[in-house]
Amino acid sequence: MSKETSKYNAFTFFKLPAAWWCGVRLKYIDEQKAVVTIKHKWFNQNPFKSMFWAAQGMAAEFSTGTMVINQIRDSGRKISMLVASNKATFSKKATGRITFTCEDGHLIKDAIDKTVANGEGQTFWMKSIGVNEDGVVVSTFEFEWTVKLKK
Image (cartoon, rainbow, N blue to C red; front, side, top):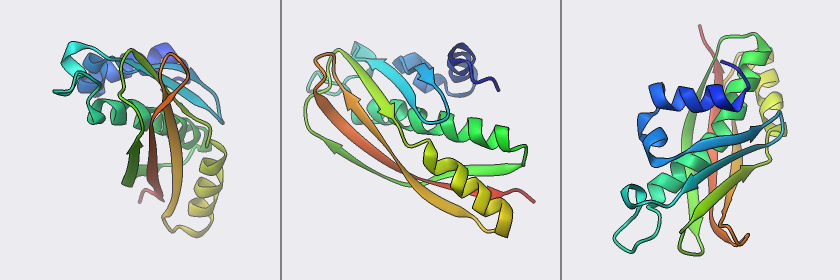
């Protein structure tokens, strides 16, 4: 899979259709940072006319997972990845366009290097912060990723 944002966005259409229909779109990615947006719409809202927490979670997870996918591919090894757990906090109603940014890409390479070196699975936490169009934090998600060599 390419590092290009358009290819990831096409990937969501075919492999993660719920995320695509909810409006999850990758806007930027490099080794250290990924930016994903989602816009509050009728079909991703809760009864309180703000964005449903699960829609926010899809965008937040995508901002972390895309970097994990890229670094696994760059390693040239067959490595599985999985979210083991997650935490979320909500501080304001999510309306309008919400931008999730993760800047924890530096954690991935170390975990991949360790799992390749010792053959044992590794875990690490990545944080994605969602802000509204005014720059106000609406939610913060943390994902515990696991990586392990495939046999």
